[in-house]
Image (spheres, rainbow, N blue to C red):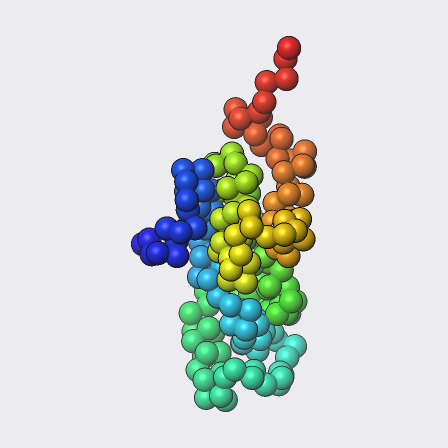
Length: 186
C-alpha cells in the first residue's frame, strides 16, 4: 500500500530499492508487528509478558497503560496460546525481559532492515534520505536545506548505525559474497 507520505519519501529508484530491501527484511524476519509498535506499547508488552510467564514473579508492578481486567485478560491470552513444548524457554525469556531489552532488540531489527536496504539500493545518500523521511521529527526538514547537515544526521541513531556498518569489515565481506565488491585490480 502506497500513500502520499510514502510516495514523497521515495523520490527516485535507489530510494525505492532501499525501501524494498528494508521491508523485504521486515517480512522475512516475521517481526513486523513488533517493529510497528511504539515505545509505550513495547514497554507494556514486555511487562505483560514478564507478568504472564516469569515463575519467580508473584506479583509484579502495575502496568500503567492497562486496567486490572485488561491485564488479566492479556495474561490469560498469552498463557493460553503459548506452546507447551516451549514453556521452559518462554519462562527463561520472561525472567530476563525488560522494557529496555525489548526496545534494544527492536532497534537491532530496524538496523538489520536498514542494512538490507543499503545492500539492495547500493546508495548511501538515498538510504539516509529514506531513513530521515520515515522519522516524524527529522522528516520536517529537507537534508539539502538544513544549515548543518552533519548535526542533522547525528540526530538519527539509525543513520549513525548505518554509517558504522558501512565502514565495517562485515559490510565489505557481505558485498564480496554477493558479488558487489569494488574491483581493486589496476
